[in-house]
Amino acid sequence: MNMNLQLIAAHDYLAEGAGVLALANDADPREISLAGVKRIDLHFPKFADGRAFSQAFLLRRRLGFTGDIRATGEVLIDQLVQMERTGFSSAVLRADQDLAAARHQFERYAAFYQGDAVNVHPFFKRAA
Image (cartoon, rainbow, N blue to C red):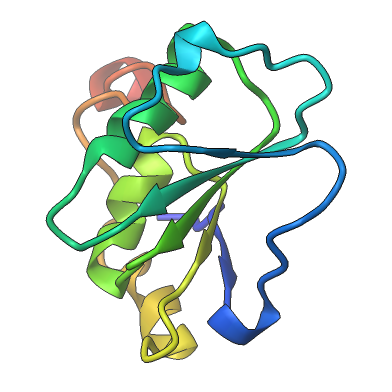
C-alpha cells in the first residue's frame, strides 16, 4: 500500500494558522461553512472515541472537502491506516509513538477489497 498520510511528530505540530478550523467531536460538519478553510483538525480525545473517523469520511466524501484533514490528540500507530482510508491526509502522532513504526504500518497491507474515502471503487473494479 502506498502511504499518502503525512505523519507529524507531536513536537512539530502547530495548531494555529490562517484557514485552520478545529472541529469539535460532537459538531456536525454539514452545519459549518468550509469557505476559506484549508485545514480541518479533528481531535481524538481518547483511543476508544472514533467520532473523528465519521467526521473525516463525511467531510471528504459527502461534502467534497479537498484540503488537509488532520488527526490530533490520542493518535496511535494502529489507527493510521484506517485514518487514511476514512479521509485523513495528515496525523499528529501522540508524543510516545515512534515515527518509523508508524510508517511501517502502511507496508503491512497491499490493498483493501472495499472502497473507501481515498479509493471509492472496490478492488475488483480498480483491478479491471
